[in-house]
Amino acid sequence: MRITGRRKKIAFFMVLGICLVVLAIALNISWIFLNWREGILFFFGVIVFLAIITGLILNTTFLVREIRRNEHHDSFINAVTHELKTPITSIRLYLETLQRREVDDKQRQQFYQLMLEDTDRLRGTVEQVLKAGEAGYKRAAQNKMDIDFVGLVSECMELARTRHHLQPAALHWQEPMNGTEARVQGDPDELRAAILNILDNAIKYSGSEVDVSVQIDTSDEKRVALRVRDRGVGVPAGELKRIFKRFYRVSSRATRQVKGTGLGLFIVRAIARAHGGKVFAESAGEARGTTVTLELPRNPS
Image (cartoon, helix red, strand yellow):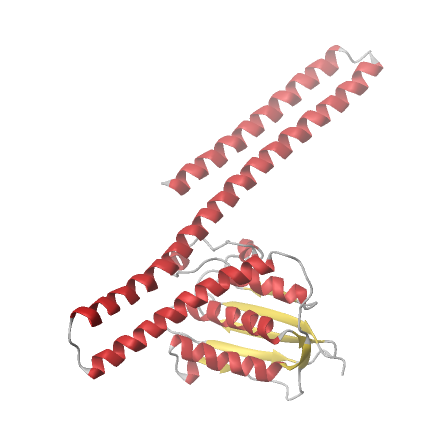
């Protein structure tokens, strides 16, 4: 209901802006025809006409952007609330069970494991929100050092497999992969966060059958490229650039079932820019998978 109401507001302001523009055009054209002999009045009439049109367009654009920004902000609040509340409720339930009932050692260990997983989920959400706050400030990467990029990606792949309980074949290297060493200069913690966000995103949007391929391209002497391809829900062509905006999530039936904050790819873009690189996405359309490419400058040494 809230989203429908905002869409109605967007439509109202767009129609209002168009009507005001048409009215301004009609009035100014009428005025110009009535006063065409007066050169000075004609000149000032054109200036006023352009000023009115510009003001109306800017006003309508600003209102529509603000409404959409508030819509994305509310979606983010709802997503974060769910991501925080669910593990807290789960942990509390297990603790109350342990407090009120006698459970055998096997079940107790199972409860401990589930609570640890919920704690990791809770910590991941908090870290992502904090990282997004840091990414909002444009700055160069801190704590730069020489990094073995292939080794870092391999480490992130193992972490992603463990985190999502995947079989080794679900997340695999894609051939061909050049044997050339790939080293970059950067902050290992930030680059690890960027790679993990790309992998997590590919896994979450793969659906029930996860098949994610990872490739590192070292054919360029100046840049190294990480390509992560999934065969999941895909992204419409018109939204390939928008998915890197803060709070933005693709509005399709398949993506609504996936929980998230809309911050992962925004963080990736901010980290890539801080390291002098870039990130972009490619997709043939909905239900046809997505490829996210992270490009970074290679270490000259």
